[in-house]
Length: 48
Image (cartoon, rainbow, N blue to C red; front, side):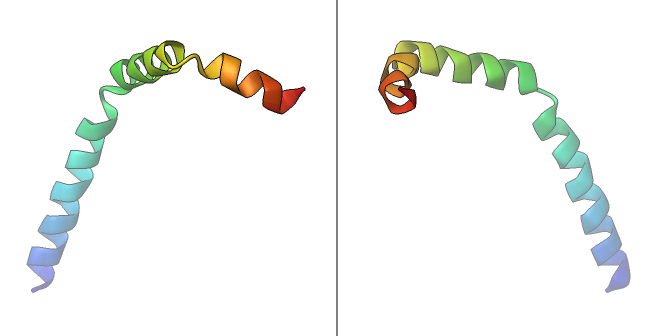
């Protein structure tokens, strides 16, 4: 039982590394979404 738990933790920790490996494309997609939705124009009245 302990061996299964240890193996599961190791496998899951390896998948976390792969999930964070593509941060650049995620950031680019988020920036594109903000540009397309004109988020800066929507937020401006809230700050003034």
